[in-house]
Length: 121
Length: 108
Image 1 (cartoon, rainbow over the protein chains, first blue to last red):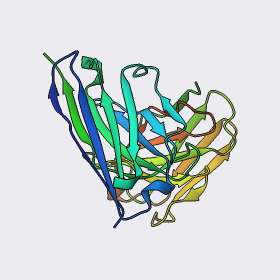
Image 2 (image 1 turned 120 degrees about the vertical axis):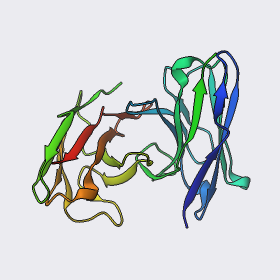
Image 3 (image 1 turned 30 degrees about the vertical axis):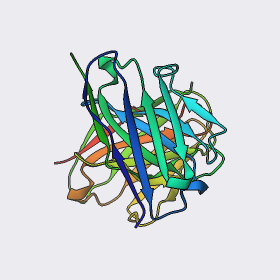
Image 4 (image 1 turned 60 degrees about the horizontal axis):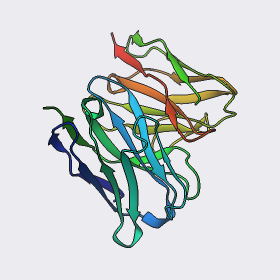
């Protein structure tokens, strides 16, 4: 079964750091670009960051550029999001999503269930 | 950044009727558009890619059309389980990938 399982979310104070992980199974992880997409409470979907199969092409939303770092470990079928200098507006459910493509950012054909990050003092 | 605008924000449709959802791009995106369904409390699910190609396992009552800047998702013979929020997403120009604000489909 194709599956993505996020972990690492939780309550965190503003200015602190958090690292999200996404464990992939059931498919060839190294054959796909991957993304993080978030959803603030009661709001729509926002693309956060993505990277192609080998990590050579990485993109970020302006709202997280310079604070968040995406990475992947193809040997361990894992995707990560290091989140620094967290702000209350980063509060959201963070989804890990598989891209249909290897070398480009296209559409997301597999999604995890998400992990919740709550930034509050 | 390409801005995606969806309308209406909410659509109330009776079971068995047709729902028509619109998505507009701020500039041409060819057919590089996807549609997702998000049932409350669940992760999004891919419905349509390439503006008109149904994803694996998606019922034929879901259909997509359009190109350039104007796109439509049509749900024929609406079922109770179709109650959800629907999002469009462009992948013509990135980063960033951008989503529309969503259309909530309610069953009367």
